Image (tube, rainbow, N blue to C red):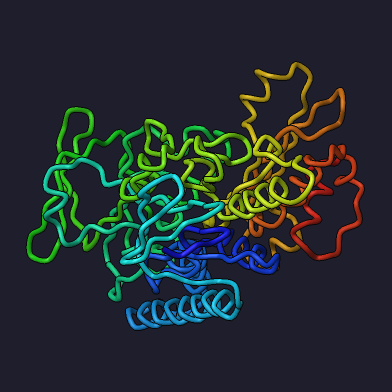
Length: 444
C-alpha cells in the first residue's frame, strides 16, 4: 500500500492546478490518469482547444480543399500533443507528485485500487469527466459512420455531407465549423426550433445566418433508424406523420453528456450519487463521505472548463484559507458558443426578466455600423441587455457578434460587482474595437 496526503482522480485543468498547489505545500500527491493520451483531459484533448483550433482554421479565407482539411486535422493534433506533454511535465517535474496511468476504483472510503497498486489518502478529489450519451436509436451501434464530438475531430477525410443530431450548442458549433470547411450540413432537431431556453430574437438571427450559409434544419423530427449502405449512412426520420430518408457520409451525435462514474465503484466508499449518476456534493464540493470531494462535470452542472477552476478556488479556500467560498457565489458567470459569429450569454432571458422584475428596460442594437464590424467584414451582430431601471443594474445580456466571448466578460464583471450600466456606457474604450459597442448598446 502507498500512502498519500491527497489523491486526484484524472488530470483535469483544475486537477493539475490543484496537484501542483498541494505539492508546493509539501503534500505527497498522487494523480491518477487512465490514459497517457489524456493528460490535461477534455479541454486540451477532445473539446475546447481542438474544436477552437479547427474553428479558427475553418475561417481562413482560402480554398477549402480536402487536403486543407487533412492539414487542419494534423495541425490540431500537433497542438494537442504539445499541450499534453506540457501538462505532463508540469506535474512530473515536481518532487512530491506520483502519476499513475490506469483507471481507479474505490475499495473502501480510504483506499483506491490502481492496477496492482493500493493507494490510501487523507483527501481525495474526483473528476472523471462526463461522456457523450448515445441515444437509443435502432441499428445505431451497427453503423461505422456515426461519431461523437470526440471521434469526429479525428476523422481525416472531410465528410462531404454531414448530419448532426440535436440542435444544441455542441451541434451548432460543429455545424458552423464543418460548413466553413465546405461540408454540406443538415441538423436533425426534435423540436420546432433550436436553443429553446435562449432569447427568441437572438435565436432567430442565428437561424437566419445558418440558413444563409446553406445549413438545413430538419425540425420536429424523430429518428426512426440509422443504417449504413455503400459506405454511406442513412437516417430514417419521421416528421408530421411522414417518413423521410436522409443520406450522408457521417453522422454526429451532438447529444448531452452524462457523468462518468459507473466504473469507480463509489458505493464502496459510501459516496452518494444522484439519479443521473452524478456525484452528490454540498456547496463546498464535499461528498457524503468525509474528505472525499468531487468537482466540475462529474457533479453534472455546469459543464464548463472555467467552472473547474472556480471549483479549485473553492476547494483551496475551504482547505487552507477563509472558508468563505462556495458554489452559491456563482450567481453571474457567462458562457459562449463559438459559432460564426460567436453567441454569448449571461444569466436569464428577456422573457424571464420581465416575469421577475416589474420595471426594466431592454437595450438592443444591431451593430451594422460599428467600425470594427466593417473592418472584420462581419456585420451580423445583435446585442441585447436588460437593466433594472430602479437600480441601474444589468440583469441580463445576450450577444451575437464577433468577439462576443470577450465582451461578455466585461458585462459579467460589471454585474458581479454591482456596477450600473452607465459604467459601461460612459467608459472610454480603445478604438476601433468590438468592446466600444457597449457605449452604443447602453446609450440613452
